[in-house]
Image 1 (cartoon, each protein chain N blue to C red):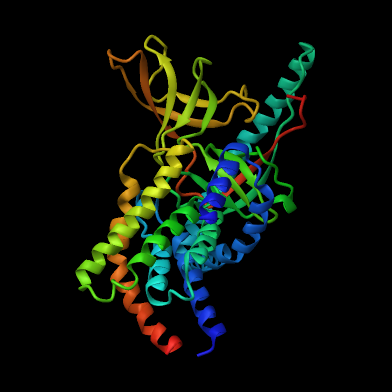
Image 2: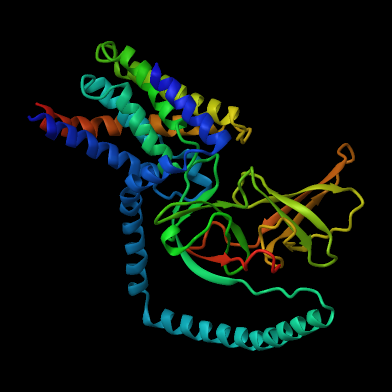
Length: 262
Length: 159
């Protein structure tokens, strides 16, 4: 009976007041070996597969990567010039300049199997300087945000979680909106869009930076489907996330520039 | 056999169950993962009620909560409820035919999932689907195998 009370107290304090970080910290230390135990064989299998891949495949991949690196370097030159120009122009306009964020690579060690919570666990934690609230991206777009930091690991909530939202703007016309998760792994939804708003299928949505959590300009997704239902006051807009939420292994933690410089 | 060995064995089965629970399953299938941990707890309560009881179930559930990273205490509460009902059934379960045992397991798992769902519902995380009952079905398929496998080793350790 007292255990019932204890668990209800635990649930309430954790869900409503978020006061259990210390308990969580200790528990996560107990749990870490189990996570490693599950993760290591999978990682090993990956490594073995890599060794087993044929010479031909490697040569092809190498050529491919070189080509990509070449292209991206070329674009980067342009970007550097543009960035410098942007800073200069901003200086001329006497508006504060934006610092570029710095990135850090982390690896996904576990995907939450809880159907009510879309999150992943990364192999970097407080010891490596990860902070709660840091945005997480992959090569193609935004993945989510760090919600909990343990000494050796950190937990990231995904965009697709039904309780998560992110402020975006349409790259084509600067229209702002809020994208929320749907609980499905490959769909997001744009909330409260009036029937008359200018949206097209294929429009790319990027972070607006107005939520104060994400730096502006990272791709979130593109519009997949727009449904006008006359009986509803809002349009239902389906969005496909840009990031490969169910495929990536490596992600980038975005270190935000110091407060106030944005 | 010594008590510590028996405890060690039980602990190893729990570790295996935890590991199975957090095994990464591809996205579309992860709702259908069996509740290995609940099955193992039920098994031990039927077979070794003097060693594994409600308190053990609670502790095991708390660790599971931490592994899942959800709200602390939900799994503990669910497993404890299952353990509570399993203790009622533990004398009867050996006397009834196998298919009725199976039904009993079905009911126990259902209770566990419902408690989980209730907690989720009260703190406002609902998916509004009936998928939360999906693990019950997959666990039903898992139960005969887990029982046979554990029976095999249990005879060696506990006799």
